[in-house]
Length: 191
Ligand code: IMP
Ligand code: MG
Image (cartoon, rainbow, N blue to C red):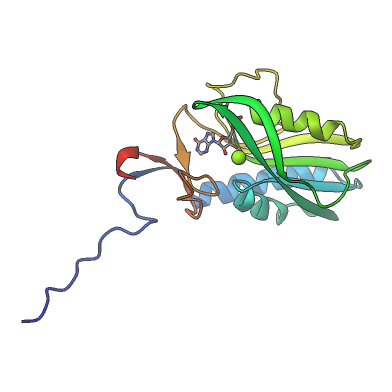
């Protein structure tokens, strides 16, 4: 007896446990706007994009292709110390920059800012290194849980509600970074 043909089940990108918040087209459009803004504002300056691994990688790759300037980029990786599930704001640099940023105009590129604790501490560390200027680009801004109320995000892709979002670099336990869109996991227990 031959086996019944398999009915195509949902794939990772069509997973019914995901509710799409921002589509690929919306993301592309918004990043083109941010790229134009940065291109205008940094004309004639030595710009370095500093991506915070790993979440930054998709945003960084798309953003830099919309910035029509002579620029370089670098990466760093940090680990945030957590007290239970709460961020304490202490950060350890796991991978430091490959090159000095002294006298350079730096844009730190992040996936999302929520409490802002990790990024505030990271900015303090970078500010001690003598850059000409440091600004912040975060693909997503989740303002509700913000503890560091004074943290200024200079370039924001989208503002999101106080929900756990994945895709476009953002993960849940390492999964979903490759989604080309941003989504909410409807039932995290079923992820
Ligand atoms: P915080 O701003 O110090 O609380 O930490 C922000 C970091 O937590 C981000 O860089 C992400 O790695 C992670 N994070 C916060 N919210 C989310 C989310 O909704 N989805 C995935 N990662 C998140
Ligand atoms: Mg991150």
